[in-house]
Image (tube, rainbow, N blue to C red; front, side, top):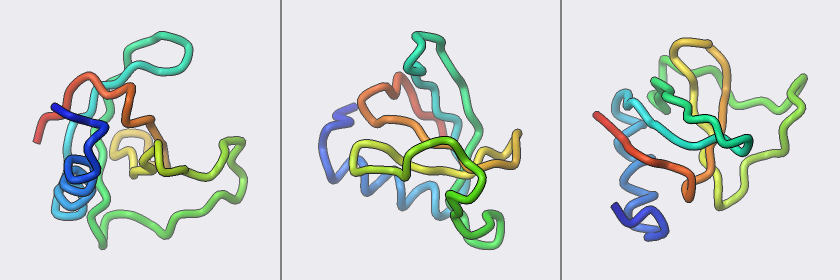
Length: 85
């Protein structure tokens, strides 16, 4: 998986817009995280930074709706270890 490839990133976003995926990634503190997430309209609320302590997503991160926590979360593309659809 070439996560640095813009085509791959766009494909991930497009797939998440159609349904859900399970994304595994390494958090900044080194812990492995597995997240069931989506970008599907009708499931997600509008993105809002209000009340969050995190920086807004950059081109290196992807903000997604965490289906288990019912919150916006973000991960860095370069820390993804696997994606299952």
